[in-house]
Image (cartoon, rainbow over all chains, first blue to last red; front, side, top):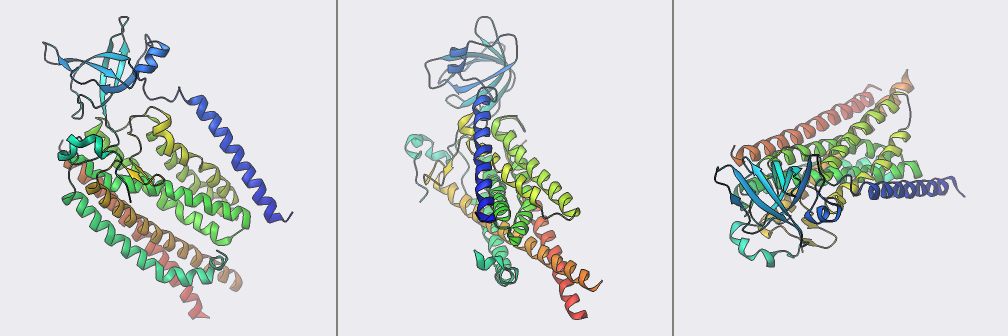
Length: 146
Length: 238
Length: 43
């Protein structure tokens, strides 16, 4: 084998080996590196008790309720599964915190299953469009790049 | 490919190409950013802050594309001992690092008004920060190796191994739950969830920054070749 | 804070970064290539 071919062969082998190692590491990290738990994850694995965690999903349509004190809100986080998480938060929410929009909350689960958040972040989706197109959200999704 | 291996022939092409890429890129960037700032619509959810997309996304693409190019050049250097490949890999490192840093900073400035935070350790943000650290490590490693008179082979191996972070950044938003939203534009599937009125200034801006990136790489390669020539001549006459 | 503060800050930093990088790359290329020319003329 010519030295050039040998080097090529060795290098390709090394790349494949590193790639394999990283894929293995990534699959092992799948759960640890999750930034938040979705309602389906909580339903499957149980609500983590006694420590701060993040949960995330969509704010269910019509679920935001402002309590009598004016600063505490309750809302329901859903995902594509039938499961939901009830959340209570006291404080100011980001501008993008809306119903049927993404949310990530950091806080603790109570024994009752209620999630008490001390921080709320808004998570938006991958759609970008002018306001007047909002109503046609569904049709817009698969626009071709051309 | 082989015709470009010769530095003299490379310079013959690079000299006229540098101003074309540089000025062409500058023109496209200025046009696209003016449209992005004043003409493009605001977003239905994010409002005005969506305009940061026209600098953030090109910076992200170039930060990642830079390392891809660096890895390809490193591969060519290791296999074919191609002298220009080593120079190209080194020339990409600094602009790649600058664009990765710009991606992080503009992303942070975009995160505050939309998500409500400058920084969170989610998979996308963390892997992009790692890319910046990889660039810095590559530059330091390459400098140290060259100071000792090496050919930059250790840096090339590092450049190749570091490329594994690129698919991790790309798939981070699909593989893990992240605060960062999913992918909007896929060139492979030729699809986008960005409205046309925002998509075209974004693509023009990305094209402009890419041309400018090319010009910067060419300038840095020409500088490296000239320095080599000076060193070789000084050695001969001393 | 208004969104425009964040927009202008990110555009300004991008401009600063790219213009600075281009200028530095160009200047060091010019000085290196000029050195080659000087050596050629000195012979």
